[in-house]
Image (cartoon, rainbow, N blue to C red; front, side):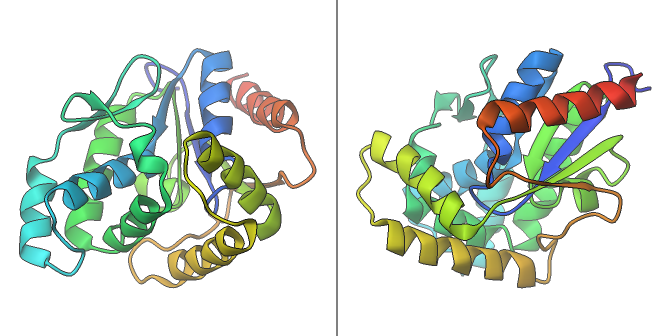
Amino acid sequence: MRPNGIIIAIDGPTASGKSTTAREAAKRLSYIHINTGAMYRAFALYANQWGVSSTDDSRISGLSERAYIDFDENGNILLEGRDVTKEIQVPEIAQLASELATLPQVRSKMVAMQQEIGKNGGVVLDGRDIGTVVFPDAELKVFLIATPETRAERRLDELVSSGTNITLEKLTDEIIERDKRDSERALSPLKKASDAIELDTSKLTFDEQVERVVELAKGKVD
């Protein structure tokens, strides 16, 4: 057992419920939630604010060294000390984050930050490569899946509440394209770890999927 407990790695495609499930599971277990996808989106927002494209390797490398990304006590993502949780939810930033996540200099910086934060355990991390790259030795690995349509419906509710207008059809297409790009990228592709437990959330309520993860975690601790 690590000093603060086990490491729980929750991976899966976009809008599969990773972040919300991880956040609530961490709360019920009194663990720290580390939303790694939010870290990449926060960096994408940073690059966007500086007008730097994903193809400008030199400037992106410099930005990755300067960017300060952290979480507050409530799990909100901070960029340079400012809460940007809502700002990073827009499709344009999510799209840029997916592109930036393919760059070695960006991934190495983010992975190093994640490993430092979580090394002593007592954390729930969610992303696309937690169980395969960031913490391949995590005591519990869960791979969440759901149909593209189900995921689009969930994400649409989030976007509408934040004031973003997009059709369900367009969002579904974007999610399918994201899945393809994330799975086919050469660097840390979206991939289920061989020892991960797959959990299909398409027909589960939020409480049901959270409780399943909490039960698995308690089983590991016991």
